[in-house]
Length: 338
Image 1 (cartoon, rainbow, N blue to C red):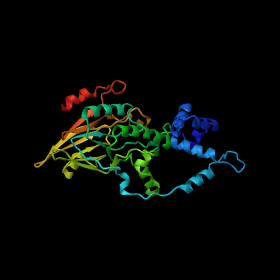
Image 2 (image 1 turned 90 degrees about the horizontal axis):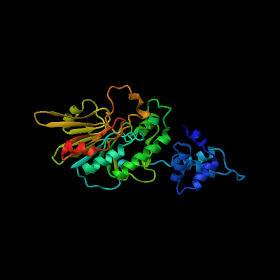
Image 3 (image 1 turned 60 degrees about the vertical axis):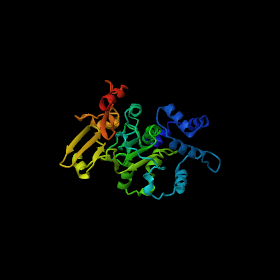
Image 4 (image 1 turned 90 degrees about the vertical axis):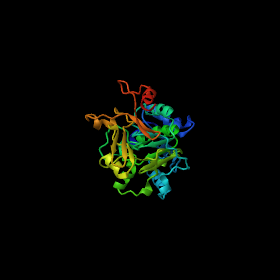
């Protein structure tokens, strides 16, 4: 639904009342969302408030948005992009002994039990490092493909994605994240339409507008050395055969992107043994955003993975007949690496 149509669902009095009776803009936005069962983001409500605060010369509320939009544009300044935009804001001590690997989440179209599942996995694995393989957000409304009109527009979609990512950040405040085709959609879309990167906020500002995510860091590839001396490259996706790429890089490879693949494969040469791991996904297969795959013979595999004491481990999410997490992941983990 467009921003204009959302605004028409509420009277000025309802907006004023929600703001007056709430402790914060976010609380007021949530109250309006519940009132009409539709997402009203904090940013959108702030825009409405500024609009309602504008006065005509005779003191009556200003009804149009032209002057407001012009004033807002005049207040904008271009940021200077920096290589530091994607770096975390504090140093960390790296420990690669127990790495939890989080595959594609596609927020806000993540599996409804993704966070609970990851919490249970972390309680058992006790990770010393967390690597996110990317596609942390979906960006369906920004897609280069046709967007389903039954889904949220870009603003409400981002609002809902932030809720998931902020919850994930509370659970795992330090993460290394792979750049990905969905995670970078806003930058790709801007490039395609000739919008300079100076006009676009960094990942952290987009996902955490009120602060947070200081421990997140985004990478094209993440190259680590395991306790046994082996190298592992984490990346969102590979071009061509993943084991050939492992041999070329002379390193093991872990990737996401392929929702329906969930495997560890090995290949040896006269001088080395390499492995490649593809970690499935944490999407909600029933979400309308993934309706394109309803007739695909290969279905998404819901789960995550880890590298424990230098050994790769696949961790499927146990599901019931309705596709919901059954909560018994500890038994699976004990069988796989006890």
